[in-house]
Image (cartoon, rainbow, N blue to C red):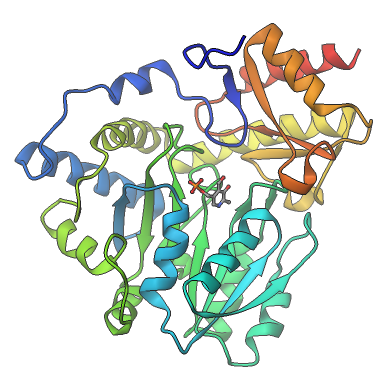
Length: 362
Ligand SMILES: Cc1ncc(COP(=O)(O)O)c(C=O)c1O
């Protein structure tokens, strides 16, 4: 019988496992969000996030899941007569294109087959028209388990299209994959915290460039809750425009302290090791859904080459070991399945999980 009080250990690609010591941070006594104690907490978290995201520009603490930032990026930084190039390579990048249209902006889509990457060449060909004010990119497509080559894309864009604003959904990429915000020349990057930050869902961190803020001032009707201008103003006082989810910020403080101490190079290396292990297992027992060159270090989308009933294996592992991994997303259900290897998940955890899946295969 299902009991929400006794959930499985989560290896789904978000929310992922949140450790007990992290959860306890969220239970700290609450603070008044206009008080000095909160301001101290806020300032410390922003300072650490700047180190984690490699930026000296703006960092926002946003009380919403990441989908809010899909909308915010468009409503703040794209005018109604401008056109956005949305790159689409899976379920989440496709959804962002829908959000652009729902905000009443013009949107052209650069679509590739699910499982393929969006490359610098493809983008170059589209941007050459000179038609686009901004581009949307998904760093790590959670449906296909693919990391787009965004360092190459960014180099190309800085050289050839320096005026096009760059918005990046790094939801399942941050902080498991390399990300140097200022150096990459991006304008907005964001991630909700239920992925590699390994916190419960409902909160998002974002980095926003000075250039994006200049643009924002010229865009009318930016809405209320996600208007970037008050975020910058409030940050000056170490506050947020509206009452934030303070428990999440306690959790972020704890997690960022660990990240800074470990060093981001080491954090990325740790994720690569987990990716290498999971990919090796997947290739031996099944196959990879996307080309290995682009396979993600934060989650693996495994191709169900054996034609097993994925739902049955998920059910068995959950019943026997109180552990859950993910079926394929949307049209990839049963055709693939997904294992998260990010945040506070360890190699030891992954060995245990893959061992249990192996037992079910027998
Ligand atoms: C790549 C990507 N973008 C956006 C989202 C939506 O994020 P949220 O559920 O935090 O709104 C997800 C959710 O899994 C995602 O994986």
